[in-house]
Amino acid sequence: FNEEKIDIVLATSQEVLKNLYAILPQPEKILSKYLLVISPRIQAFAINLGFDADKIILAKPSDTDIMNTLINWQRNNDG
Image 1 (tube, rainbow, N blue to C red):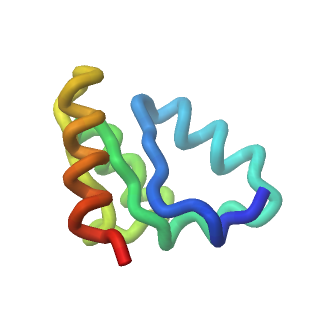
Image 2: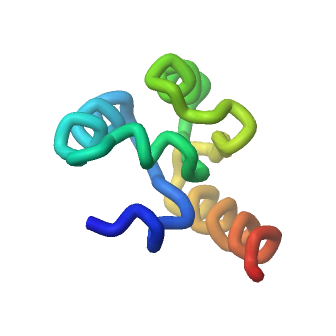
Image 3: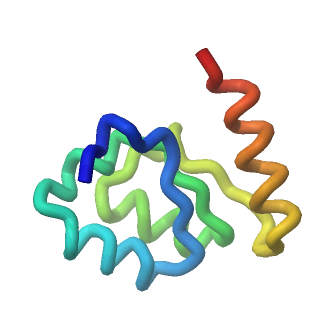
């Protein structure tokens, strides 16, 4: 695992975040990454875990909306 190669993390549930945090050898390093979530509940949970609130992006919980949000994020953060 090389957290330097990660630009954004997608979490579709609180359980995903719990498991990710549990399996990483240095979970605090992921907290500075951008995080895409699909509900305000997951957003609040992520903030409580220590993710930067300014780097959390909220998308609607559909495949199309998630993909469009990721594409728009990449366009705005490329380079």
